[in-house]
Length: 341
Image (tube, rainbow, N blue to C red):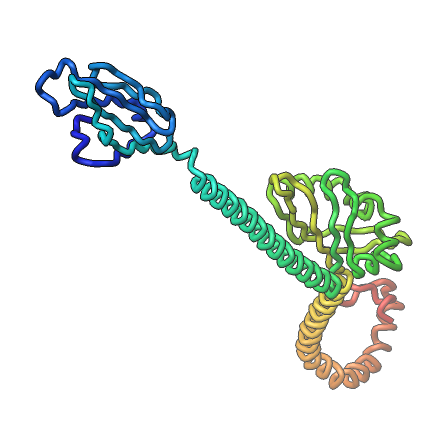
């Protein structure tokens, strides 16, 4: 810094500018060569340091602090100006060496940790609240699902794709197959395909493979075998449930008892056949009625002429008998007379 000391009494520098070169001169021009100088830098030096006629000094690597640089001079007669000149030199501390910096840093770090932990706590509280909400909703959904399953008129089962084991069944499924409870049904039936009749078991397995590919299979008719061996006609619809990774996990099946429907269909078919037969009988009756009407006329005519024919035959018979006795065999209307007598 090329500046006259007389312009200011204090010099403040950053910590990196801690080496200073100071030049000075005594205001005695009679014999400048004979001028002498001395300086001191408080608090580093308490005594004056003589420089003879050298009129500059280098202050090297000053530590951050407040210094008072003083200089005085003398003329050729050895007379010293004891008042001299002084300047305050302040070398500022690095930011990291200021106490207020550390107080501020500790405050910021502490506040940061506080807000960080507060933020973490808030996130955990929100996550816990969301988890509790999801648990409540899941329980409500499970309760609703269980209510729907239990009140469904159809038999419902949930079985594992890999093991083919039944893990859920409603009361209607147990009742349909003759078991006293769902627990007995799941305990006694180890494999979902065991409830199918032997004739339908292989077809049910093939349809299960199709369900894995397509996702659903609806309204297939099967015959199941009850606990006591009774065959039960049902209509089954099955849907595939996958896990989180998209792999097949469960079969959800509903079975509807079709025995009443089939009996109703059989009765309906029988009624139709009876109606068809009745229609045929009505048609036959009409035909016979027509035939009878057509026959009534000649029959009535025959009845009316039968008595006359009888009298004629009575009168003609003696003549024919005599002819028969004389000629023996003869025909009348292409019929031997002896047969017509």
